[in-house]
Structures are given as C-alpha cells and as structure tokens.
Length: 94
Figure (tube, rainbow, N blue to C red):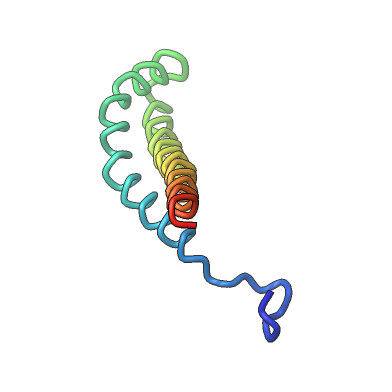
C-alpha cells in the first residue's frame, strides 16, 4: 500500500487497463458478427411468441445482451490470458 494514498482509493493497474481496451476491441469487432448471425432467429422467436409489435423491442434487447456478453466474455478471457502470460514470464525468468 502506498504510504500517501487513501486506503479506499484504487491505484492504476496497467493490466486491468489493457484488459479493458482489448475487451472493448473484441466487443467492437465480435459483437456485430454474433448479432448478425443470431438476429433472424431472435426476431422470428419473438414474433412467434410476443407478436410483431414487440419483436422490434426484443431485437433491441438482444443487441444490448450481445454487447454485454461479448464485452464481459472478452474481458474475463483477456484477464485470465494476461495473468497466465505474466506468471509464465515470471516463472521463466525468476
């Protein structure tokens, strides 16, 4: 703990910053692809269950779900990968 830092104040973690940037990039490129391949199924499903009037809202909700899923899945994956890579480097050199 830094001697002049408030105990509840988080310090900057470069690994976390890199993980966030990689997750945003993965969500930016992967989210639309996943949405493109699933939107027709979701629209047909929502239309058959909830009617044509609500199918558009279901597609909007699906877009939000896809965005959140791709971001958090990528963030977890990159976080684990970066920790594993750092541990592999540490065990190799120390």
